[in-house]
Length: 88
Length: 415
Image (cartoon, rainbow over all chains, first blue to last red; front, side, top):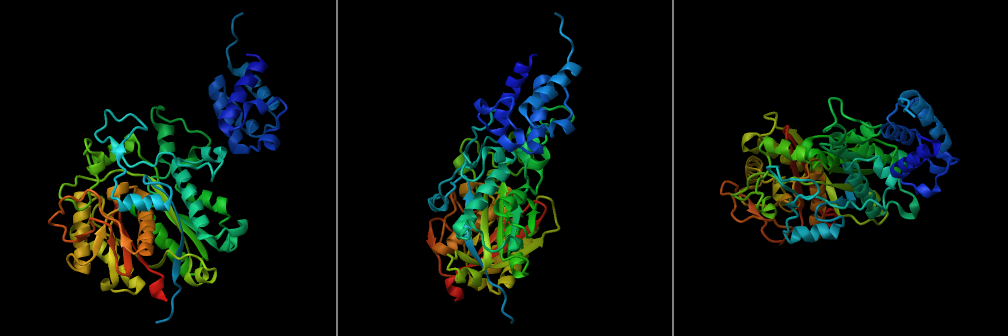
């Protein structure tokens, strides 16, 4: 799964859980400043991301994320660790 | 006897199956139009009870954001809307500044099932451990309602939940009265909320033989004091009142719906579901409320009965009313005939209806009352009836034997 695919999936999670327009989200979106999220929101996003990507996330890190790019990186690291390497 | 603080009801807000506006609720009650319908919000084909009185669209958009609503169970959403509208109705938020100061405000909420829908969502079909989310605890907890109302309106004095099943709403308003009287707060938002109409809860109440099974005629199912009653109809909703010292209300030229003059609370100490035979606990509760209001039974012009439409409640309550006021002496209505039984919200919704009754000087009728149970020797209101100015008693009696009675009086007669 590419970073772009992770971003697209995360974007739909943010849009759904935080009631924001997905078109306004970029890798640079600052979660707390631009979306006014708090730790509960980030925990909720992390749980949804775990389900979506089938990996387990470090919630202590997840609730301290600053940008969407940070979130993509967190999921990328977890996926690389947890998911079986696909043949080919 | 030393003068005691008089407490005014100056704001009302509701979410009910008969509407979100006080006028709509009142007109539906006055017309005796049942709001019970076959449930369409989930499949009911294989259920023994297939109907309820539901609120439908909550209409929360003007009170909470979508993100806030996601953090609330339906029960809390109903409550937050009703409480906000009660405060707006009281006119204490003029200029965007709620008076009095935050430390002198309080909220008391009643609920029996709190965040039941959230609990079911986390548990049903989710394996041995369920599938809780980071929000599950915060949506389920019984104190979620006063927590949200305190945050929404900067209420920094007492904030409490009272949970006494079907008497929760009545107890919440009574405890709010006490907070004003004892000087713990100058403004109290008090009420109740419930939203637990689900297949599981319908089955649960059915299996303890509490619900009507009149599936072919939902609108005729809730029939308090009727000889053919066969159980209650599940409802949902929320109602909140604003309480303040009468002298404060008069000083700021507020509209006073009624004076909340008395509060009684007793326990049957008898059985989990059955009322004490003869309605002894109910009678003691009404007597206590009248003593608290410093009124005699002869000064009561109307009773808004708990009137669930179960055989045992209505019989026990009728016997208690008949003993206390005399056979057929006081006109009795039962709002659950129209809006069903909203459990922890019922006492609060009926307190609102009682305040409207005091204000209107007229009592709404009992719907579906074709043949009065000959064992219920009470004067049932069959059509809207004008009342003499006087006290109105609102009753709530719960599984567990918890009883609450409120006494409301017209403001004009107190001057």
